[in-house]
Amino acid sequence: MKAFLAPLLILVKRFGWTLVTLWAVFTISFLLMQAVPGGPFKSEKKLPEAIIRNLEAKFHQNDPLPKQYWDYLVDVFFRFDFRASMKLEDYTVNEVIEQGFPVSASLGIFALLFALVFGTTAGVISASYRNSVVDVGLMGAATIGIAIPNFVLASLSIVIVVFWLHLLPASGWGTIQQILLPALCLSAPYAAYIARLTRAGMLEVLNLDYIRTAYAKGLMPRTVVVRHALRGALLPVVSYIGPATAGIMTGSLVVERLFNVPGSGSHFIEAALQYDLTLEMGMVMIYTLLLSVMNTLVDFSYAVIDPRVKLE
Image (tube, rainbow, N blue to C red; front, side):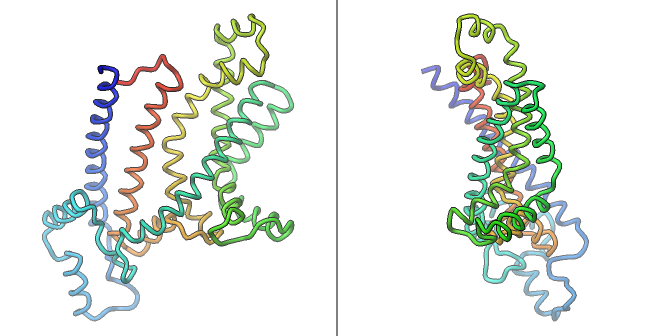
């Protein structure tokens, strides 16, 4: 019974801290948006004053700031309503998120799987052949993967894979062929980081006493690496996966734009550029919630991967 209650109490505690974090992010974002010069209804094409007054009344822009804050807080936290978009006609923020987030999440899941498979494999091989040509080559490729911007990698991929080799389509969404190339481009920097983290973790674990004992018992090197060393070496990777997953699954503006993927990544930038305050708030809150959930899952996975780690 005690073993069951301990994780439950931790979850309740984390839920409470998640609410506090969401409230803090909401408050800071609201105040920053109010401090931004300009406004959502001021543009190069001047609107009639009557229309501006109607829009300001619809979005409660004329109310006192404390009332605006409280009403918006109630809508978001108690009604789960991010209100209507200030720029996208006939769309609410909830509808924009419902349409774009599943696409970005699907792309992100594929990208995360590619990053984990390629990054972990490269890191293990590199650590197993330390200071060899293979090690230098893989870590050099990882450094290049970190250094090359997404828009350069995506552009080169389109030129080479699509126009020269004619292997995959350049844009669209819905088939595995259309998902593969943008997912690989999105996963590249994350795979590079995971490769370096896995290599560092493997090198540290391979020098521990229990690994020497496993070798002394006559176990095959492959068995020692896969069954004994890899589990301990993955702890730094698990720490990185939390924020990386949130970043991947909320979408990449560059990748989604270049491959014409109808995800939610572009809404981060477009909402800020167009002063769409309600849409920007919705995207920020969704990102914060996802980041908090993933960090909680990462903390629980520590105890699964390494029994020495105790949840508190």
